[in-house]
Length: 108
Image (cartoon, rainbow, N blue to C red; front, side, top):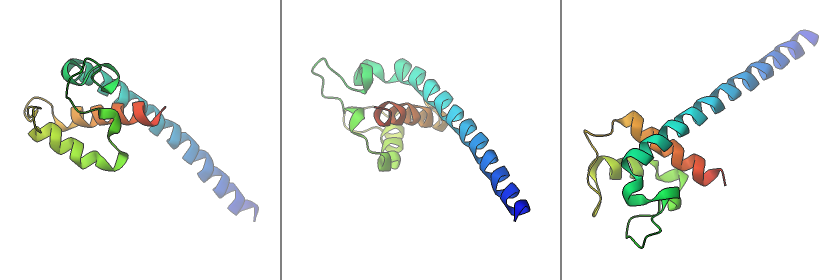
C-alpha cells in the first residue's frame, strides 16, 4: 500500500510541476500573442480586442473557445473587409494571437 501511495504522490507531484510548466508556456504564448496583436491587429481591431472608435471590425472578445478553427480560417484567408494574413503571419503567430485572445477573455 505504501509503495502505491508513493507512486501516486509522485505522479501527483509530477503533474503539478508539469501543470506549472504548461501554465508558464501558455502565459509566454499569450504574451507573444499580445505583441503580434499590437503589431498587426490592433490598428483595426483596437485596444483590448475591440474597436471603440465606431469601426465595424469584429469584436474579438466575442470569440468562443470552440471557434479556434474559425479564427484561424479568418486570419489566414480574410473575411469581409479583413485582408488575408496568409504569408504574413505564420501559424505560430496566429496561435499566439489566439492564446492572447483566450487569456484576455477567459482571464476576466
